[in-house]
Amino acid sequence: MTHPSTGYDNLLVERRSGVATVTLNRPDAMNALNMGVKADLARAVAELAADSEVRCVVFTGAGRAFSAGGDIGEMALNDQPVRSRSRLQTLLHDVFIPLAQMEKPTIAAVNGHAHGAGLSLALACDLIVAADTSVMSCAFAKLGLLPDCGSLYFLPRRLPMSVAKELVFTGRRFTAAEALQMNLVNRVVPAADLAETVEQLAAELASAATVALGLAKRMLDQSLQSTLDEMASLEAFGQAVLYTTEDHLAAREAFSRKVQPAFHGR
Image (cartoon, rainbow, N blue to C red; front, top):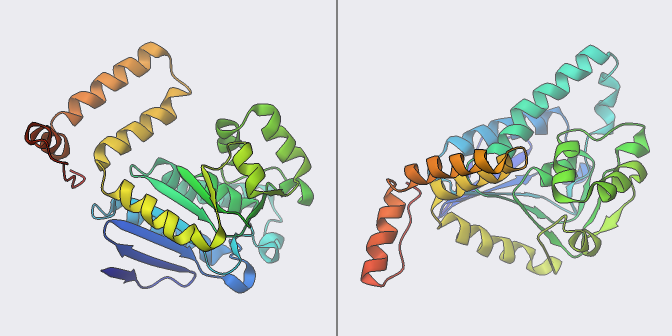
């Protein structure tokens, strides 16, 4: 059963069978991230992270774009460096960092154009599934800006540094097929199959052992800044916790009975 959330001006948020789907809903503006969208995203990310019934979150866009990036019409507000810096830090700490650190799987279903901060939003998700008609870019250099919203963190973690620099320096557009070749996205599917493909993937992740996936996610992210000894200690700590979870105990019981376990995210 689908449960729509109300009170959002620029998003559609639906919950069904453990999966929450967040749809950016400014199709006439190609889902550009204006202040209203950013405020709605901050609220949605916080609510969904705290909702124990939600075990996987999907982000997508209405119309022909995932998100065209920052709203050019609001860039005139960035007339003072101190104020602009504060605004961007708030955006990072309210949207992009909490999204990246959410202890449940997240999927970006890139249904069309994804540029600038729109691409950053996709990169903040764990997995990216793109329609074969999608077009992406870092875009910022075309406006005399550097990538923000976490792109300078996310890109080098998905790409070789030389490739990340080339995309940032040129701001050029690239296709979904090229993004797959670069390993920037996980899958590319025909546009007509995107919704069904992501629905199946999200359902699979939502039915998994959510606590284990959340800890694995945090530790994988931590591993890039850690030594082997540090990661071994984290793994031992995490595993000790997981041995006591309902999902692990259910899996042991199911194994002894030679049946598939049913996980409940606890």
